[in-house]
Length: 408
Image (cartoon, rainbow, N blue to C red; front, side):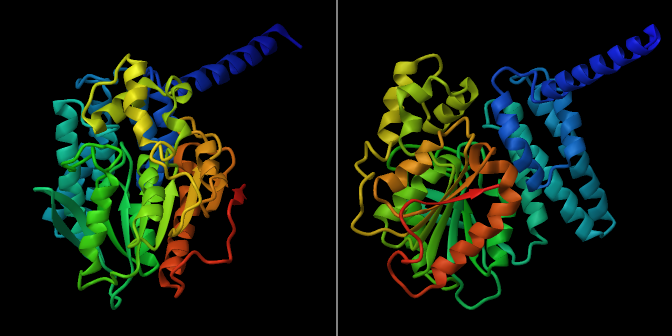
């Protein structure tokens, strides 16, 4: 082989390596953000972000905290601003379908721009614009979106209700976790609606527009929502389920055990016990610690003892619930077996404690099995419909403790 050919091959190999490194810098050159981006990228695409557009924005980022060019919030707001402007032009031209589509895209990018939580004035502005664009897009939703305000503890639970054109449909109460909020879960909401289920989406305590901090007793906020809808004229108050994602998955399991008004519960990647132990907490990325601290309205940075102190009471084992229950709702738990934020053993520990559940574990996937959402979200919606419309009041006998569905 001639020298020039060897040199050409060498250049090609170096280019491949450089390309890999550059792609990795996409995911990201930001210390501590890499686990978030890797685990959320697929979910952001499912929510409506364009892969190339998102990829381009992420490549420009080198500052996770600032607000100027090169910062997370600035670079992710750029495509959001562009889609918002396009939406307004379409609106002026009376092209309402195009306007709604562009507003929805803008809402997705503003969501990513304020991610993982509102930590600066620039992120607060991104979140404000996100809500504005989402509600603009919602004007074309079918079924329509209704803003509902539920009084509780001298505050308000603010959420979005959507009811299909079916007489008294079952209701699914839905929230995300510490970094994904009520207006960020349109694929999940649409999957429920497609099954003829009404949906009420609100923010987990400590996030979004919630007026409560995240704490071990936050399930009381969910129970208040469920109590409110028991007598709502548009839904079947006897057929209520929950679909709770990420940190909120903890409350899906708890509600299945303690709230008799919950008939079926889906837990997506929820921390149950092991995630709250010192051994695991020391492995959690700083950005996740900061996000949880913000939700809890406390300071946890660089203080492992304090992190353990506030985390341990969240454990369902510490709360005395990891045991065979006298009664429970139907329960489905889903996660990826390579979740870096919540150990997969936190899914298995539920059934090992004698609690009946179905387990869908996606091999090779990460937190909340984000890369498999397109597959499992419709299946989970169908599962909820089956559980909420069956006649039995107790857990169905056709699934056993610890049944595992290992997905390819």
